[in-house]
Image (cartoon, rainbow, N blue to C red):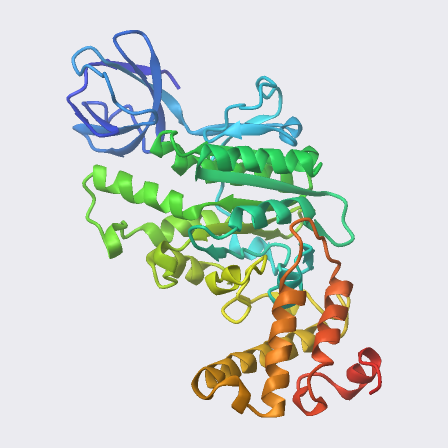
Amino acid sequence: MPQSEYIGISQVTGPFILLENAGADAFYGELVDVRTPGGKVRRGRIVSLSEKATLVQVFSGTDSLVPDSTRVRLLGRTLQVQLAPSIVGRTFNGLGEPADGCGPVFGGKRTDVNGMPLNPMARQYPKDFIHTGISSIDTLTTLIRGQKLPIFSGNGLPHNQLAVQIATQARLMGAENFAVVFAGIGIKHDDAEFLTRELAERGRTNNVVTYLNLADDPVIERIATPRMALSAAEYMAYELGLHVLVIITDMTSYCEAVRELGVAAGEVPSRKGYPAYLYSDLASLYERAGVVRGRSGSVTQLPILTMPNDDITHPIPDLTGFITEGQIVLGRDLDGKGVYPPIDVLTSLSRLMKDGIGRGFTRDDHPNVASQLFASYSHVQDVRSLAGVVGEDELSKIDKQSLAFGEMFENKFLKQGKDEDREIGHSLDMAWDILSTLPRGDLTRVSLDEIKAHIKNQ
């Protein structure tokens, strides 16, 4: 498509510039080059247009632009990313540009970062257990191939450490063609250094593709970063045949960028100032996970978001919960006790777990053990509430056994080392050891045959 160039802009507002009389040549989402009087070029994209005016978002800001002499060139294409088999093991910035000093990506293809619409009838129901090495996830909130399972965290909780641990330990049981795409959105420099150092030291950078958008990068880049990462994941899954786990942190930074740009564009805000289209915008990202019938690869998503003020009803976790298939919630109380990872299993949920565990996937006793752990630990919370009223000394012997079970569950099962990679069989055996401390009458979710097989002296 021939490129059109215009001299002069009519208005500069925040990160936006207004271009007149370009409607006939422009289209929504088109990339533009904005050339300053000094000759420097900034990249932008069209976010709104009509016959008389075109609104352009400038990625690196509008500082020092002179309206009368600024040149705007329409490039005739949308935001794209260069993809090739050689991207595996490399690090890029939020716009998909190399950030590891290894030069550009050669060969391959350029693809639109917004992806292609996927026929719902082409989707295959997610199944198959993905090993993370984290007992509380693998046993109680199991991650399934093709699932989108977010992690709800809070400021100061160790979600970055957990993200790195999963990225370096995750694998699809029985498959060698497994890869990870790691995307950081609006992260601080020390966090970025921690992430890259940990990935390198754990020796998993050879199958990890990293996209990092830093906190001092332009806000508009935060909109592009997850789309870059997901485009790379789709290429690796559906063209290279890999099973790809996409870890994105922090989706709250992405949503804040959407709100900031919406306010700057004069859009009418909705709940807590976020635009009304936030739900559909998040869905356009989360729904890019899945298994496509007839394709050997798959895309699984593990987005991480920090809940403002630990409020799970905030629009970001609330809308995310509607779109995704469950959530893993990090608890501040557990973190205060020194439990890592501080996963609050009673508020966590994996809706697809039942289809990827048990016979043929993990172990036959897995479903019943998980159910018994949930029931027993839920009773622990009731007993702790009672102890807070009457005192622990006034509790019955059975209630004291329940308290002891709760302490063992948190300090032996939930708590594990930051480098500890537990096999699912080991996690299930640990669960049986802890359940064996409870009276036989309390084990109502497991069968007698399972008790005899896994608990001694029964």
